[in-house]
Image (cartoon, rainbow, N blue to C red):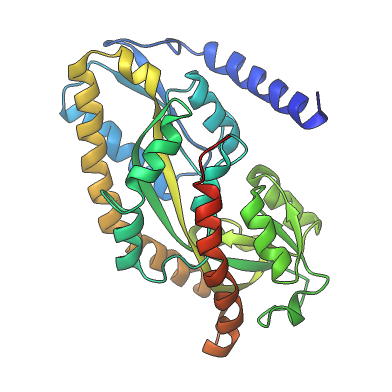
Length: 328
């Protein structure tokens, strides 16, 4: 057994113990509480989506009560994702935890879309990726209620570095860039010349504060705003469209009365309509707040964007084929 596996097992056990100590947090039927948990604060779109869903459940006269846990009080997004797979936390909003299925790396691919209209066609309700994600998550005993957009991800530089990488590979040499612990993410920034440092999101703020890393990748504007006191520059690579999975444990869902299942799905549908209608303005609003706060926002020129775009446009096709290949 590896150290990594041992640590993950301990985290899972601790999270399970915490959740089961909460009132009415076990397997739920109509009339019970069930947990909706995620790892992000109140100014994140996850919170708006969660509150909308809770209100819709009340409007639908559901007999289920939502026990809402935002802000990571039940763990970081990857650990809560695992607890949802196990049915301990029946519902969460999370990202592609590819350690549980490498096909989830599809959600981290570079330059799949470059505008919000195309993003909705690919990732939005009934979009091109809906059936693909349903199949992948279904194999993990999860049912997808929707994909939640958070905006185009770019890279940011911490205070005190006094370097703004805009020309890859040249400017990236010796630059320690935090990336999510996903193989596609690590590969991308290594290929751009950075020293890619895989790191859980929960450790990121402290790492920027202490100088463990020089910057962070995969950052939508809302997260730059949340970490504004430790960041100096925001370089708009817009190298991927960040979208999260809103999932419910399938076995738990199937155990509910059909009427309650329908109320959950109906509430989720209304929520997704609202989320996708407002997400772009929310993203742009946080970008404006980032600029107003004095962070140097850098727009890359067409020439500066050409090299990284060309690199991953060629590789995406191979990545899709590799990740969607039948599992042995």
